[in-house]
Every structure is written in C-alpha cells, then in structure tokens.
Image 1 (cartoon, rainbow, N blue to C red):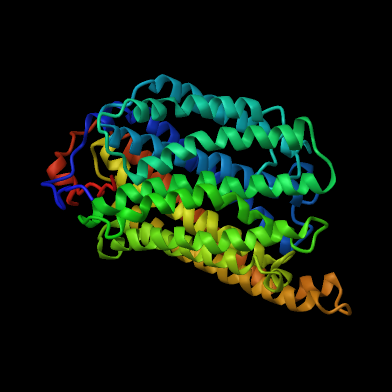
Image 2 (image 1 turned 90 degrees about the vertical axis):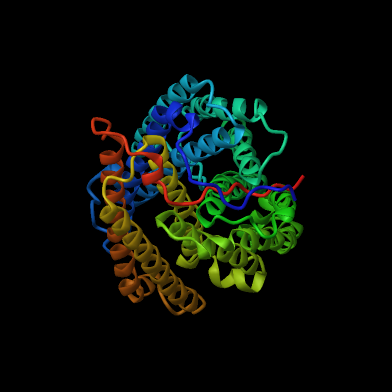
Length: 475
C-alpha cells in the first residue's frame, strides 16, 4: 500500500473539471432527458399490464413495443450517457491532466443520441430484434458502436497519457467499460442480427450479451464512480484496497458466465447452467471485495454518499440473488414471473442508477463551479427515488410470488392469475409515478445548475466541504 494522505485541505475545482464542462454536461443532460422519457414509457407499460386496453388503438405503443422502447431508452439513453460522463470525468481526474480530444466526445454524443432516436422510431414501427438488452434495429447499431468509440477517445487518451505510474481501481473499471461495450456489441450484432446463428446457439448468444452488458459494461461504469467518490466523501483510505485488483479481474473473467441461469430448463447443454452456478459462486469474492472497500461510505455525509450507500447495498444483493437463482430448484420459481423483473430492476435501477446518481451529485458542482441550484430538489429527488425503488421491488416481488404459486397449478388459468396480481400491479404503477416525479425534479435541478453561468462563481472552499482523500493504491 502506498503512502497516500488520508485527508487533504479541501476539494478543489481542477482544470480537468472546467476544461471538460461542456461535453460532460451534454452527456449528463442527455442521460437525464432519456431517463424521464423512459419513466413515461415505464408508466405506460405498467398501466397496460393491469389494463390491457390502455392505448390499445395506438400501434406505436402496444405493450411489446412500449416495453422495448422503455428498455432501450433506459439502457442506451440514461445509463450509457450518464456512465460515459462518469468514466470520462474519473479518468481525467486521475490521469493528472485535462482531457484531450473532447471534440470527439461531443460529436460522438450527438451521433449516439441521434442513432438511438432513429432506432426508437424503428422499434415503434415494429422493427425490433426481440432480444433482451438489444431491441434496437440492426441498422443503427453499427453507428452507435462507432459513436461510443468516439465518446471514449478522451478517456482512452487520459489513460494512455496519464502522468502517474500508479493506477487506481476507479480507472480500471472505467477503462474496461470503455473497451468492452464495442466488443460485445459488435459480437452480438454479428451472430444475432447480421449473420444470425440458429436454434439453441442463438439463445445462448442472446443470454451472453445481456449478462455481459450488465456485468462487464454497466456495473464497471457504476463502480468506477463509486471507487472514486467514496474515499473522497469519507476522507479515509479503503481498508481492503490490496484486494481490489483481484475483485476487478474476478468480475472481468467470470461476469458473463453467469448468464446461463436464464437458460435453466431450456434445450441447452446442462453444463451451461452448471457453469452459471460455478461462476456465480466465485463472483461472491468480487462482491465481498467491493463491500469491504466501499463500506466506508457508511461514515460519509452528503447526498452523494447517501445514494452510494443505497446503490452498494443493492449491488451486493444482486450478486447474492443471482447466485441463488442459478440453482435449478430456485430458478423454477423465478422464471417467467415478475420475480425475474424485480431482480433486473434491482440491478439496473437500485444498483447502477443509484451509484450514477451519487457520482453525478458529486461531479456536477465541480464541473460547474457552483453548488446544486436547489438543495430541496436534490433531497426531494433522493427521497422519492429511494421510496420509488423500494415500492417497485416490493410490488414486483409480491406479484411474482403469487405468479410462481399459481403457475404450478394446472387448474388455474392465465386470466385468473392476472386478476389475482391486480393489487401488486397497482403498486408497480404507483412506484413508476414516484420515480417519474423524482427524475423530473433531478432534471429541473440539473438544468438550473448547468445554465446558471450568469451569476458569480462560488469559491471552492465555500462550495466543497468534503475532504479530498485519494484512493489508496495497490502497487
């Protein structure tokens, strides 16, 4: 462990922050706009589950299309834009010099979001792939892969041109995410859309991509922000940082192998499901390392730390539940029910999104040199989004548990099952209303903060009250 001071005098606005202000604000603003749009679509799909006739006359928003639109806007709109902003900022901060090639990031962001919008129109008109996490039409995906590579240019330059020989866990996760998505996206396009494989191999490839997108792309982006922000807000070194590299490589080598749990009971080789159990068991080490290092967030104050505590708990819980549902006996009660949806929402909303919210609340005041425009809106967003996620998970688990019990009874019809889960589905609708209201508050607060350049700047010492301890480094 290198000797890094536990505390610094004060956190400061660095040249990296001010130099990259425009591109980072563009990425974050785009992500938040897509998040609100995704919230509207989620509310529509939730109402359709309980009232199938809702918007039935609108061909663009039938349930299947609305669901694909919601998923695509959430993953490729909100999570991709926000995650890239966090990764670029972290790599710039730890690289020791202002980001270079930011024009590439701006152009890439514009092309990424334009291609996404074109793809959403394609989905609405019925041109979608039908694969989870890859619903967008094949003609926009090559453009999105190129746009992603363009956005990643400043991060890659910051990594290869870093001034310090020592690297940090936040950098490892950020760089991995920048390189991995183009690879898995290109591979999935090739074998699923352009030169599609058939039968069982197609199901295996689709499952591999969905799992790799979660474990090798989205989770590393979220962990990059958490590993950077937590020691800053806590003012402490991570107590088990020497194991951080082992935790990182465990995730990189084993993360995508756990996707076989989705294929239990299907016409696939038995060893694929067995590998999911083995990989999930070994991945517990990764989750343990993350918990032992980031648990110092429990002693931190401020909005960013509160988001990260929630996200960390959800992330660890996802790892445990993914292992549990890898066992055949457990999978039988989870497959084809809302319990699987609850686990997905726990991962994407409870873990990744909350960790992104924490990182965004930390970095926005630093790149704008101003505090958040409204502390009340910031606190209101955190409270509403936390309650909304909890209500959503409870409602989905209640609906899924009822489904699991009734599906095992051959005498119960699907119509009767739908009637029996009507009350939990009302809870799902209420949860999405809360989440939509929360994210509208965040969008308004962000716009007020980002556009408030006409007023006087706030001095760093009055703006930032958190100590600026760097991570420890395992050399």
